[in-house]
Length: 452
Image (cartoon, rainbow, N blue to C red; front, side, top):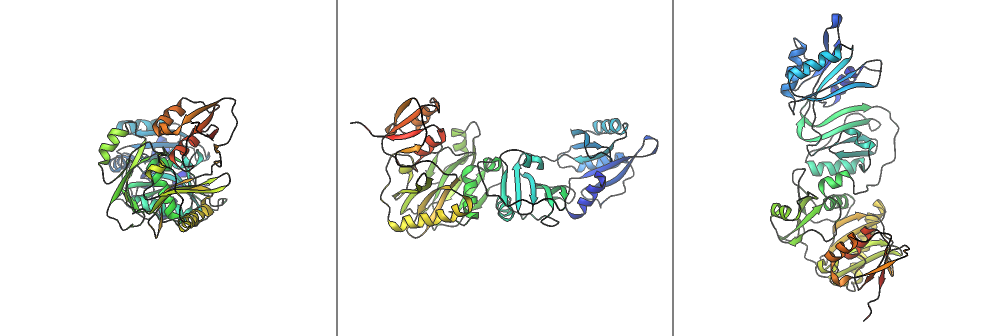
């Protein structure tokens, strides 16, 4: 097994690594530099002293801070890890203390993993990552997991640069991606570790919400997936809290835009969607003091001949919509129309293309008379069908009349335990936001006739 300093030295030969200075115990309690990488200096530069090397590392580190990792070469487990030291006095004191125990040390620049980038692992046909974490994020829940090429294209679209990895597809590579250049080579990609000939796994099917979809917002993430898997998506500018603005989709032929709020997770009908441009900063100030809205979307207008949604229900695909814009239908204030057969067939075709690759999905769509555009995408099936929104039993049932509106429904459900059944009085679409909010609530819900 290679010593950690030699393994890091070898990794630096094939890619970018965080700047570091590796130290080994010498004779008479002294320390010697074994390997190093510091931006602006050749590999393993012959610094005149440990102090000079560490001082140079601190000066050139991106965060003006360093960490100290300690270990015994014969023991694969690391010992004490000292995080984010910012002064030479503190660094020197910790080096002296740890080296007195005979430990080997690696002093590396502190890498900010909360800078809007991601960390993860690429291996075979899989790439997995999350924001605000180290590559060990892959050991935690709600990781973003993709087929390798799909994930790399999604990251290129968002961050604006290609993401090459060294080695072969059999190599398991731990990495981090940063909006600003980092490390010895001053590139956007840092290598943390590489393991050859690791056991391969099958490519995953993307699933969300996950930590990365929350990072950029659920609608933005869904549109990226829809486009990556072959659907036609309108040109959309994503103005995010955490990453620089990026765009996706295709021109619709209209010069108008819609301004859409994009929360971390779906909140059907809760936040603003408005035709035309509006100040996104004022919008966030007025509607989102808690920071739940991850981004604001400026999306090309689609001259709508028909609009609607499609979901996988208990008896198969459910397609609903209306002539023209679908906002009143989605909010539950108008009922679905009878759609032309060609429109239904176009929706079914787009749905089939996505569900064949992603499993059951939910789409919101707009048809301009010639082309069907996907304007939202979510994954998962429902148990909705004739008479039911969500199937289940309950000892006690209460009623809610949909004429009270979506806002009243949210308040009503917030006070209703999921052990109580809900009779929904009134007419509404199974694919409307009314239905979405009830399904998200999670209790048993069935349609009930209005008694006049």
